[in-house]
Figure 1 (cartoon, rainbow, N blue to C red):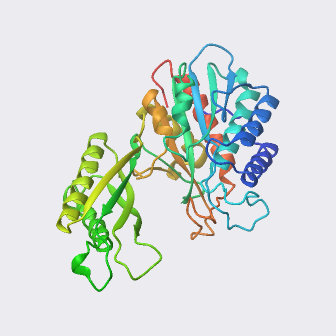
Figure 2: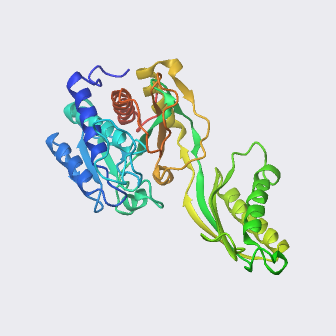
Figure 3: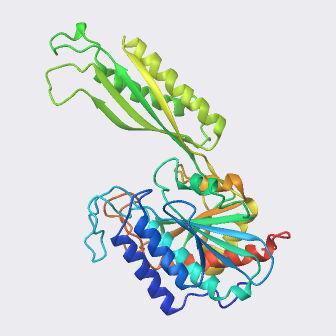
Length: 398
C-alpha cells in the first residue's frame, strides 16, 4: 500500500505550476539547456540532494535512502523545440522561435516534485534514487546515449519515465508491457532527371511527375508487402521539385519521410523496400535516384514487471478504471535506449483538458496541457519508485 506521505500538499502543488511556467517562459533547444540545467541544480541543492553533471547540459540528482537496497532511476527530458509559440497566455515563451511544445517543461516540474518528496522522506525507503534530467530528447540520436556513455546507469537496477499526453483525458493513463513506442528512422530520396521547357516534355525527364509516382508507390509497401496486422507506417513528409519559376520542367526532385515499426529486422526490410520501389519507379520514368536512410531511435520496450508496478501506482492515484492497456504508438522516444540497458517502464499520463477536446496536438504552436496533471504525475512516479525500492531484490508483489 502506498504510504500517506507520498502526497502533494498545497505548497508543492503551487510550486509545480510555478516551476513549469518558469521553464515554459525560458525554453532552450537540445544541447543548449544551460539555464534550464542551472534552474534544476539550484532546486535540487535546495532540497539537500547531491548533484552530478554527466554532460554539459542536464543533471543527475542522487538521493540515498535509509539503508541498502536497489537503485531506481527516474528520467525527465528538459529540452524544447524550434517552434514559434502562438499561445497568448501570460507565461508564453519569451524566446522567439523556441517553445516547450511537447510537455517537457511539465516532465521537469514533475521530477522536481518527486525529488522534493523522496528527499524529504528519505528515511522511509531503502536503496537509492537517481533523478535523470536529460537533455536533447527532441534531437536524434538523443541525449540518452550521452547519459548512458557517461555511466549514469552503471549501478541502476531499473528506470521509469512518463510522457504527458494532451490527447489523453486528464485523470487517465496508458501503459503496456512490451513494445510501446516504435523504431523510427528517416529516408531521403533524391531524383535526377532532365529539365526542359514545358512545350517539349518529350525531351525532358520530368522529376515532378516522377516524385509524385514514387510517393504513391511507397504506400503499397504497407498495404501489399507487410502483414496487415503489423504496426507499420511509411510517411512522406516533404516533397520538393523545381524552383520559383513555373516555365521549366524540373530536373531534380527530393522527397523525405519516416519509417516506423516495432521490429528491428522488419525495419531493415522496410528500408530495403523503400529503396527498391524508388529505383524501379524512377527507372520506368528514365530518371535516376539516390536513397539515403538515417536510423533514428529503437523501439521502446517496457519490462513486464516494471510496467506492472507503474500501472499499479497509477491505479492507486487515478482509480482502477482510469488505467488502460496502451495500444502501441508509432512515435519514438530516446528513453528506449535506457530500456535496452536495464529493465524500464514508460507510460502516458493524460493531460488533456476535458472541456477543450480540440486542444492543439504536441509540436503545434498552440500546444498546452492541463496543469492539474502535474501533481498526479508526481504521486504516480514517487509511488512507483517507492514500490520498486522495496521490491527489486525479490519478486515484486504488486
